Image 1: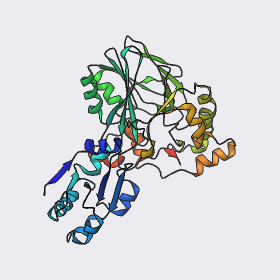
Image 2: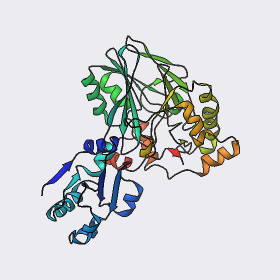
Image 3: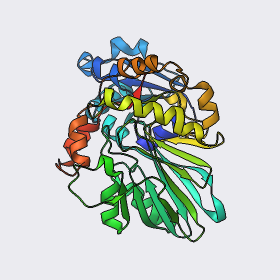
Image 4: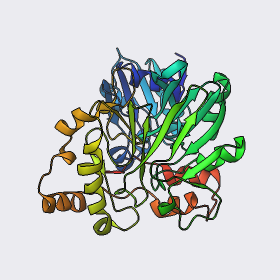
Length: 375
């Protein structure tokens, strides 16, 4: 039988369309338990590659004969060999091209909504890392918020849509992934905005992203209004788009809130985090649709693949927004932190412009799940 080569894009459609898939992950058990391809209707078995060097006969009972099977490894080499052995044993099987490295880097652009006078809002979903980026399009112009490092995805999408990128924003100095924002700005001549309180150590020019800054995109006047919202970082800034959408960066997620410790400032910033979540956001319209910069688990995706919820619904349902006692809130935020992101300090240094590792090094730094939230 033929071994099928699956692209990350094909797997992404399986995730978004909530289809069934059986995955044989042949990475080491610790790597699998830390991070895997998530799907609401996916089944998994983890059998490390070294256990299959003598063949697959002894594990065939663990591999369904009546379902699509995808073999996954770190870079693809091991999965190709295992897939070939399973194919020789009569199973219909494929392997993930590029392995988990490719899965970590794939972005799926999904339309969130139409905006005023023909404008559009897109969410770029990085399923393998939990990152969410945004592009606002209006009258031949575009603005990008929280772009990840795969700049060609945004440049090609803008070209496909026939728009010029005029504005690029980062809601804060990211620590869990490498920003592509200033590189897109350099490529296109767009203005790059960064909160000045997060930019005290950056070594490149930027335009200060300040409270109540209002940037218009296109002649149809799509308003992108900044709202200072510290807590994840001291400079964290949210955006209100078209008076309909609230882009929260890493302050507020669907079922959790942002962690304040990635710059070693948990005790200093926890008060700012509470002020943002319990006062600043409470003053906003509850009908605003929250669009965060990350998601935590695959169940947070809507049926169309977007990650979005009404602010009013989150006030009712998000545990992090319902801790009335301030001392308890402080304990929750400082005592329930997951492991810090891989290489988070080096990633901060990259995003400051202080170091410039090569592509392979950047890939290794970003490998692993999203860890921006308080559990």
